[in-house]
Image (cartoon, rainbow, N blue to C red; front, side, top):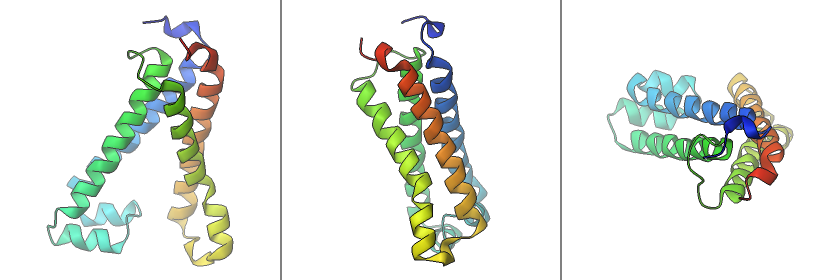
Length: 149
């Protein structure tokens, strides 16, 4: 594995991967926290009610999201040199960055179209995800030439 300090994007990608791990762990915590946690983290009333009824759907959806976030973390850690190089590393990091940024930015047109979506959760979650995307973007850009080998 390359020396992590060998390229300038490594620190950004380590932070980005760590943020994705935190997000994955928070999703898993919702499963154990139950309906109140689903509500608090903005999963919606239908997910909270389904969790309260003991249905498997909320847990499976939440686990799938957590798994995706962990894969995204693995891509960031791979780009930083902490994990072996993953296939399609550049493509994966660009796609992950784009998803985070789009998720963060979608709030603006959605708010203009339907101002009822302007609750505190929508604002905070969009801002947080926008930060995630920015961290991935900076790390990917700074590491770009090192990600090719």
